[in-house]
Each structure stands twice: as C-alpha cells, then as structure tokens.
Amino acid sequence: MNNKLHKLAAAVSAATLAGGAHASIVTSTITLDQLLNGSTSHAGSFALSPLLADNGLSGGRINSALISAYGFSDTQINQTVQTGYDEHYNGGYSGYVVTGYYSYSCGSWWNSRTCYGTNYGYAQYNNIDATNYFEQRDSVDDTMLLTSGTGSASDVVEHSRGNASSAYQGGYTRGNWTYGYDTVNVYNSTLTDTFSGALFAELALGANELLALAQSGQFDYMVRATNGNFHLQGLSITLDVDPAVVPEPGSTLLMLAGLAGLAAAARRRRRDGAPS
Image (cartoon, rainbow, N blue to C red):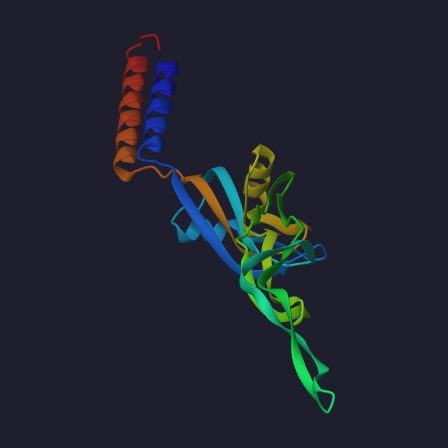
C-alpha cells in the first residue's frame, strides 16, 4: 500500500505543478549610435533578473536565447579612378570662309593704284561633346562581428554599383578660324562602386552559454568591426522562457485531501491486520 500511496502522491503533485504553464517570449532592445572601427568595440550585457521580473517571469527557466546586432555602413570613397574618355559629334557646319586678304597693283601705268583681294578656304566647324569617365570607389568590405561566450556571428556589407551621374565642366575651342575648329563641351560622368548598407548579425546561445546565463544572471556580448567601420545602431535579446511553476491553490487542496484519504485508508488496514 505504501508503494501505491507514493505513486499516487507523485502523480498528483506532478499534475498540480504542471498545470497551466506556457512558454513566453521576452525581448529587450538597446538603442545605440556608435561608430566602430578596427580600434574600437562595444561590449555590454543584459541583466537577466530585471528583464524576467519586468515580464512577470521571475524564477523562470530559459529554453533558448537569441542576440542580434544591427548597424549601417556609410559610403566612404577612398579612391577615384578615371576609366575612360570619349568624344562624339554633336552638329556643326562647313563651307567656304574668308581666310585672308591680299593686295596687288591695278590700273594703267599712268594711273597705277593698289587693289585688294580676298582669300577663301573650305573649313569645318564642329560641336563636340567630350566625356571623362570616373569611378569613385569604396573598396573596404565593412564587417561586423558579434560574440557571446564561445559563439560568434558576422555579417559583411553588400557590394553595390550606383547609377552614373553627369556634370558639365566647361568648354574650349581647338583649331583655328582659317581651317576650322571644334567647340568642345566637357562633361564628367561619375559612377560609384561601393560597399555600403545595412549590417545584421544574429547569434543563438548554445547549451553551455545558457547554463552560464542561468548561473550568472547576465548575458555578456561584444560587437566589433573586423574590417572597415560601421555605425552600431542597436542590439536586442530574445528569450524563450518557461514560467516558474507555482501550484494552483485548488490543486494543492485536492492533492492534500487525496493524500489524507490514502493515509487514513492505510491506517485502517494496519489496524485490521490486513497486509499493506
């Protein structure tokens, strides 16, 4: 009978303690604006107890933990290279033009005088659009590294090529009026070739880190730039937590009543001499 009593008591206790407990998701965020490069890093921690207490989960068991770091890499041009040059004809005209004047003697020997003539030449006059092509380059692939315990996660900013922009730089002429000349309009066309944009690293804690988190009560982390630089904008931690198990009053009374009944039955059997 004693074995039956113990088994029933254990079953009633387990059912009482397990009733109504559901895992909860808890998130906490830290907002930052810190420039990180090869010589700087950001280290910090999340305090576990206040976070759980604020969400009514004091004493809860952590099933999993996920930490995320996010930031942004600006475009930082470190090289400008001319990649080409071309010209194209954009209209003009051609024809005979006055190339000069000359003089000669004219009239009779008794009435000599000086006359003047005009030289003509064929000339071409062109309008030319000339373009210098440049690339402005940010050649550093900025990299974020997030570490916690023995775990790590990283992200590398994406490479992108922008659309070319053109700007008028001025004009000049080449050649001469006699034989023709070009009116040249100069433009600079610039294309950006960069590593820039959003960065995001996410790290899930392993079993050892979860155990250390439960023991120490805090979640330590570090973020640094392993290449280039970026703005660290914030971090967040997400916990999956089982609430602390608290017996419901009604279930506790039921368990006590059941145990009392079993104990009374055991006493009666012993008094009547029946085997237990």
